[in-house]
Amino acid sequence: MFMSISHLPFPSVALLFLSFSIVLHLFLRGITYLIRIPDHGPPTYPFLGCLISFYKNKHRLLDWYTRMLAHSPTQTIVIHRLGAPRTIITANPDNVEYILKTNFDNFPKGGPFIEILKDLLGRGIFNVDGELWHTQRKLVSHEFTTRSLREFVVKILEVEANERLLPILESACVKHQPLDLQDLFRRFAFDTICNVSLGLDPGCLKPSLPASDLANAFDVASEISARRAAAPVFAVWKLKRAMRIGSERRLKEAIELVHGSIMEMIHQKKLENHEEGKNKDLLSRLILDGHDEEVIRDMVISFVMAGRDTTSAALTWFFWLISSHREIENEVVKEVMIASEGDERLDYSSLKDMWLLDACLCETMRLYPPVPWDSKHAAGDDMLPDGTHVRKGDRVTYFPYGMGRMESVWGKDRLEFRPQRWFGSTVDGTPVKVSPYKFPVFQGGPRVCLGKEMAFIHMKYVAASMIRRFEIRPVGHDQPIFVPLLTAHMDGGFKVMVRKRSL
Image 1 (cartoon, rainbow, N blue to C red):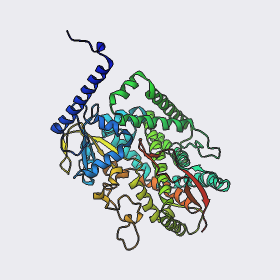
Image 2 (image 1 turned 90 degrees about the horizontal axis):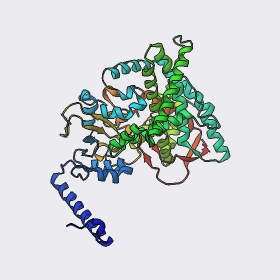
Image 3 (image 1 turned 60 degrees about the vertical axis):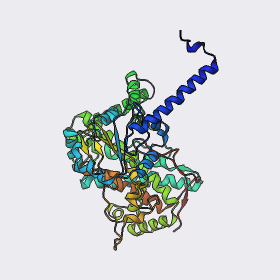
Image 4 (image 1 turned 60 degrees about the horizontal axis):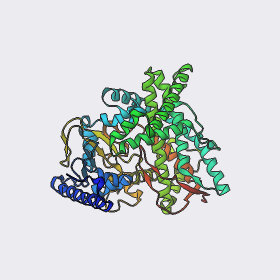
């Protein structure tokens, strides 16, 4: 009869376990070389795929992917992982153009991606495909191209900056107190986007810097939804959701607060007088057009999410980069003063002429994109321009963070903050047009971001208002950590000291 392991002395059990582990490890490593596909991806094992490597690198996925992409001749890798669809990750501009434009219809958001964000975004424009997407796109495209909305945005920015943001910076300057600039930008962006989208002023940037239950709920919902997408095994979060435990319970509570608050605003707006031209916020316009309440809710939530987190992230990294490149900072200050002609009031025309500031923001987003990656799911079998085979159901991810670090895309100085690259060799000093497939921060093709112009107005207004009055200097000299969620942010905030600028 065989002896039960429980009857073996402890050293024998330990030795047996160690021997088994070594044999298993050698077997897995050996079989890897036998079955591994030459796709320049991570080590891949039978059944598990690259789950082990993925788990080891889960806290540095961006740099892990970037390193593998840089070593791939095509800047494309294929990931096989237990519990997730086959994933193609690319930093190749030709592939990006093919995905976002050339064969757009074969690369929708897809069911797996929609499922991850459906609880939060519902049927909003950022989380739907097909006819519903086309309908919402057509509606929002009209609203975002109206001159009245642009003027409305500039007016809100002026009030929010002059009455709240700048006085807070002035106070910190006088008192020599450090500030978390990232937190201020998030508050500013939330106030602004709520005014534009909802006609509501949450007052997050009032002098007392009050907490906002709605803003906090957006934070919780965004973070947990993002962690769903990065989970090593998707079945885990699905089980937690079904049982309503842990993070999925917190997500459910946060979403209920967000949805309930937005629906309450919709009902309140419907009781108001909606004469055309009187109410310029997006919510009022959608109600006037007679759309279903849930569709309105989901669309508004999508725009609040996008408008808040992307601009605040870009501005945070812009001021960090500018603070360590004083010569560029001085040139931006000169440009702002010339474009505004010394006028305290900034308008759309003066902002449009700030080309160096525009280039600095683009260069910031090249290195630290607010949305570091975006995924589609193949509707059918296909082949990318670089020869990578795509199977129906594959997750296909284009990777702005990695693209900004590819020598093949941006040259040997790719890791340097060099706004001049955006001017090329132009004689008149105007920026060159860079392909959106080389710089896909605002996507490209049919899904190109409709809020791009509004985002630049927002960022340029805030940056110009601040940089001509104050010097922003980081507290400490450590390299900040870039954290990717639905949108990226600076880990731990951005602590700064504020000084008066001497001109």
